[in-house]
Image (cartoon, rainbow, N blue to C red; front, side):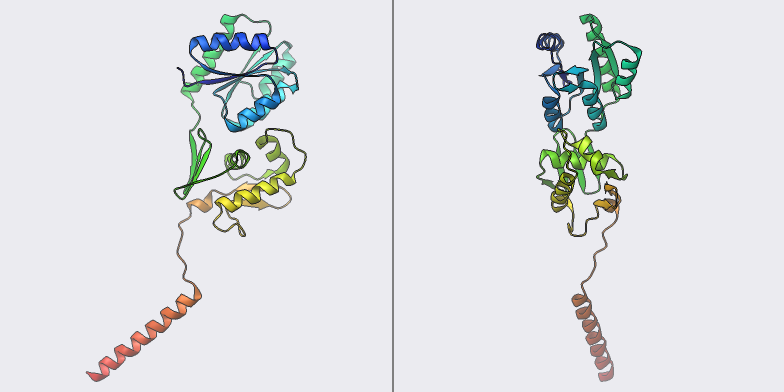
Length: 262
């Protein structure tokens, strides 16, 4: 069976089942999803190789789901739509779709477009993990390893860390993090603060003085990968320094006594 995982987000159960059946006959692994809410919850835990999204879903605008998924930068996207004006097609492509197929369409054309997109994925496959020094973010298993140990993160904490790491050091506002990392629309930006605090307790060396996930005043948060690349120079506490000085002093005195006896 193919390792390519395709998710069909289509409100029409008959069309959804028909498309899924044809793709399974070719050998693809297929999941059928009926609504935006189900899609967001599913994709938060696991993102497909290819998402086939209807532009008009029972609980909202499929183009907005397309844009949300595009922000994750892992899946290819094919939009299906009864809207065939140039304006609608341009809107879908600008939202992040890799292809746009208008209804009604023939099954052979549909399969050909899917195969063209999956060929592109084979050529330009997404990274399997992100790695910054002692921190490794596994994008397939959605696990995080820090200093050789696996960190127990909730699905939402993983999504938050992944979105921050993807930004490559750029600050992201709380509203942007809510839009990109949360499976459902949430209006309370303090939700981000709560999850950042929890995340810091799990991956920061000193959560009270965070250096990996930094607060950017009047904006939000940024991921600072440089701190993981810096060599750690061990420091000696003041008590140890004092003890070391006394030992050096005593050693110097003993050496002097030995010289005098000679």
